[in-house]
Length: 128
Image 1 (cartoon, one colour):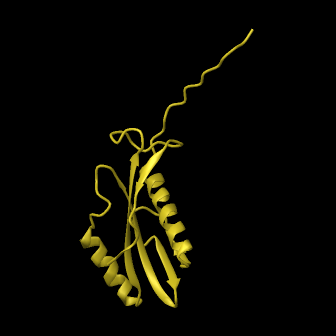
Image 2 (tube, rainbow, N blue to C red):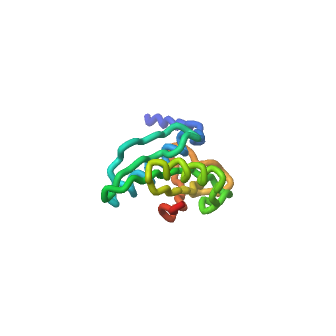
């Protein structure tokens, strides 16, 4: 006699913090691959910058934002980014924005779920 047990776990949508952390991981891997040295990493939502890095003796501030479909990760919030750039200039740092678009791979109308496929729309750092 065979017994089959089917478990139906509810899908859990990623929280705003989890989406932010995912975006930071994507950008962090790129920075690491490009030879940036991390001086500070901040994963607190709405507290910028997320990365303070050094590369070739130059300081870099990187603002990371997870952008959920249908919003466009290429749209820049220039008010906040201008404030960040002004702050970075006090430290003679370059400022970058990394908008990471995230969408459910199976259905763009659904949220991004834990342990489910997703699509990333990320074109790299944008100098501010």
